[in-house]
Length: 212
Image 1 (cartoon, rainbow, N blue to C red):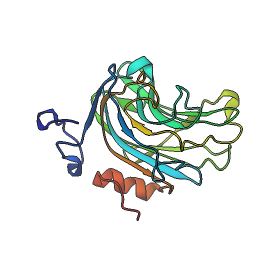
Image 2: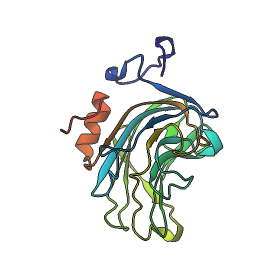
Image 3: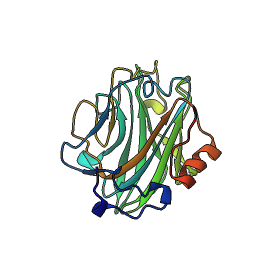
């Protein structure tokens, strides 16, 4: 976690907390891990949301820096992950992957929505109840285009449970070869699909919603 002298200029004043920013250098074994539990397991089973603030310096280790990861494999086969991908110059896309028994679901933002050296709020909502469902992805409170890059054009088979995997921030669960390069803060998971208004509330206020 950061010290006060490492604080960056975060857009939302609600995020001006000097000791709750997780920094990753894109190459070391740095990782923040939360043990599997009912609060974070299988959030997409009936529809769920993941939200996080990121500051990106590069694609990260091996070109696929993990933002959030709840799987033990590089391809997210037994869970899911959100990552950086597809760099061009100082920009990149955001990817989301959800493991299925036959063909994993893989999606990226249509455009390179991240420019290095800036803060972004990233949110993904997804309902795995049907293989035909695509996630919705939001950058700074706005819905963005999403491309399905799954093999064959769509996921197939039953979604794999992620209940045995820890939630890993800034790296891959089960290994440390996908280190994020930058800063991650305000991670939020819910088994509720947030609508545009809910996403905007998190983005504008800078803090997760209390849905209890």
